[in-house]
Image 1 (tube, helix red, strand yellow):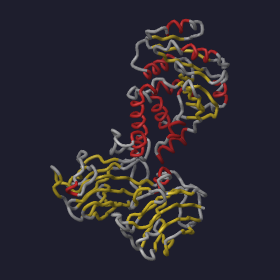
Image 2 (image 1 turned 30 degrees about the vertical axis):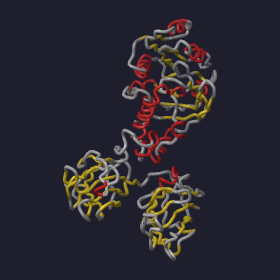
Image 3 (image 1 turned 30 degrees about the horizontal axis):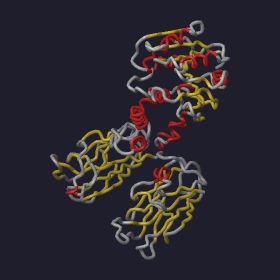
Image 4 (image 1 turned 180 degrees about the vertical axis):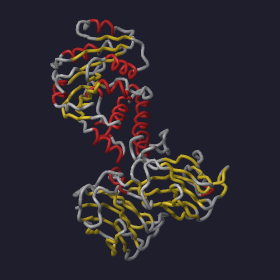
Length: 506
């Protein structure tokens, strides 16, 4: 990519104290084909005086009152003459005099976007931030949801060169006031743009800028953006807000959604044994939008107020799955008998109804979840995953229906049927399950099936199973645990099966 013309655009508003350092950083670059641009949002401090000191070096100075930083960045893309464009806004600097040369020197000629690492500077401390290939970042988000590491490794626009024509085509979306640059990269990736990561330190990103001053808005926009590209929108809600996300309880096109036949959220109704907020499912049924990923099952959690009934999941005129919902609180798994098209509309029908609030309802819906064939991080040989409160982030992806919450040393299975969903990255021969028996059950035994095949029947304990013929690499494998008895030990009101400590593949 060396030899291509590059535009470096500095967007500024009342940046008299910082803009000179940024412009000097650009002028110090040893790359010969650089166009220096400044887009000033009609500053009313001494910014224009600082800019005037560089009048012989600035190729284009544009001054206008704008609609925000991303409006100004879109304007810069319209005016830039370079084939590639990088935004180094007031206060930011290049890490070295050969930052652009090194970045372009390792960039593929077909790359539409090429980015490197950066240093995050607070003025007191400097933190090196290494990124990752963009496809890996997006796969991690889709399969597991956001994390502190994922957010930190997302490319910074100060370290990103973008083909100017692509910026003009896709533009920054001004609906995002703070993270439109992140939204742009995600849309560019979805459109098929060639995005390349280069492990070179490109820029020093100055803390305290536009996004830092609007931390609440940043959190809200990151929440909205992340949940749209993950199979776990609820994890995005929890990551950014803990409880109380404004998006809590809503689905997405990627993860699946409920689109009609359901009421607005209602408060708990303890008189009907509904102890969580709920939505009433119409007596005529409800319709779900299938995710964009391959789907194995639909899990429904609710409270049945109409007596024991049968639930049927339909695709057009064909029944895909049936399950029985007992009266009162229930959780059922509807395993699909065949694949469905991404985005298909699936109808859930019930055969009974009763008054619930102001409507005739089949049941109160507390939560639903589409289980994908490819969801969750793959487990690799040698990985040992602990089902404890300390390991909840890693282990939570593997738990299907039939489990209680994480405790300090293990996780209890619920009753006599619990499901693990294990996606393996490579062929494996052995699955080790570290189980502990319920102390209230004498001589407890357990049956283990994997993808429907019987793999073990015997005492509960540390099990080592030969799974080479049944665990399918690249797929989500269903491991079912069926203890012969469950019990409520002591004053514990829960129906406990067995305690799962860890799993390990070999």
